[in-house]
Length: 434
Image (cartoon, rainbow, N blue to C red; front, side):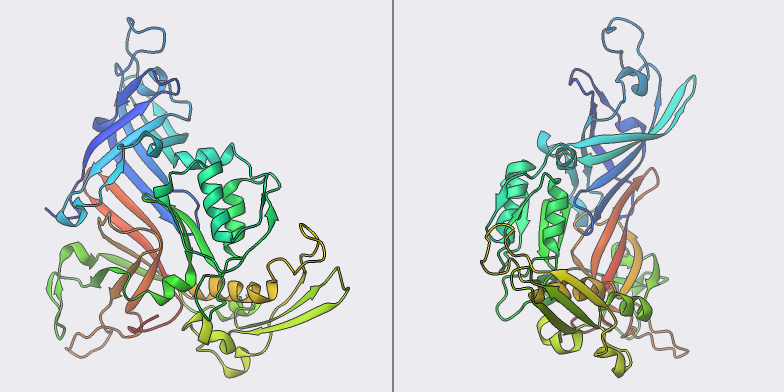
């Protein structure tokens, strides 16, 4: 059975807000899309349903005439969906889409759209989010935190969002940061902390983390760790070919489950945008409210590349060290401990964090492949593209081929088949280590 074949919905039970009525919507699902993104703190999904009347009795009228799902359940937002989709090939068997084994992992209806109600049938789309996404909207961070950033993130997810310990994956940070939540939402606080975080890696100050959710749980991952481990963390290799079979001049057998069906290079180097953002070099001025002194810091990506790993500096030499952005700030003194050391010294992380985020998005590639539910946002995949040449030899293009990070993905299911679409990013060119 091919990975692109139609998948089997084993469970799709939609429960009303009061928990008294449940309806099986498996027979009415005509489309399901599941999304992950390293820039999104929550997973999302959409399910399109077609239903006829006479499905469920309205509350308080169990002995009366049965109605459609929309009116009989009724659908108002907040309903729980227990969902399980069986893998359709050996590659997907071990990592099916399963939000049914634990009620804490159910998906919840955040809204209903595309509603079309007729006399005999109805269609609608349920927009879905995780339980934690709902909790985030009703929770606030109010207490003071004085530990390492990674410990603070764990405490917020566990104590405020009420996330199970086994669904929290946080890379340790080397820097401590004192802050007060100021009654902000948990996801807002953690995303804010991500840009201030420095990984616990010897000899490196490469700041910058991503905070996101996959179906496995929450991830707070260092960009440096992703880059340094990009080779050994490769999850799959995809090859673009117009036909199946072997690839000429290469010891590669093309499996249709791992063939790129469509692709588009959306973005390459954007010199002007990088200059405006100060990606190559910047000047920062910090005012110290305790001493009334101003500290000037010049940051150059070229000089710091030994710490942050390889990146794309294929630009004119004169632009690599010329500051293209000036940023001002104030040292944090006295907010929590007056007269003590500067809280989270910004000269040690702010410029590197900005540069790393920008450089990682140097190239952007979108691909469509057969369904692969083992892949998650933040994973590494290898893409191989043929060399554009008049020669009969079919070598791989050494510039466009290579390792990419999954920035976002969508697992798509419909009545005709199952597919995975991905947006991939990386900061440099070629087949070697990125």
